[in-house]
Image (cartoon, rainbow, N blue to C red; front, side, top):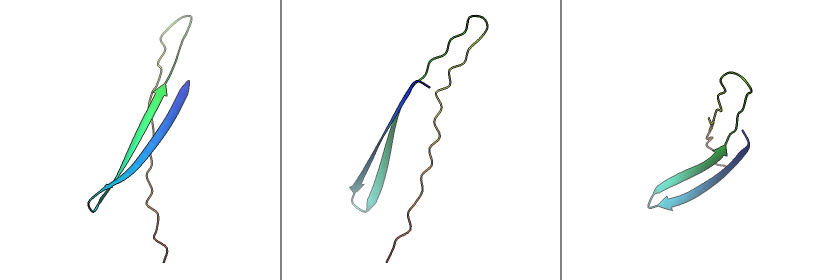
Amino acid sequence: MVRSSVKTLKYRVGKNNYLVINIYQTSEASAQQGNVLASNAATVQIFKKTKKR
């Protein structure tokens, strides 16, 4: 992977909270002989924080 940037947005509509994750990735692969695969996969994990009172 050559470059990766992640932007997250949180907004609320009524009682619903929305989380939007924008992932922009570029990948590059080259070989002199044979096949090359440039993977552009992303792994996203979302954790919910516990409320402290």
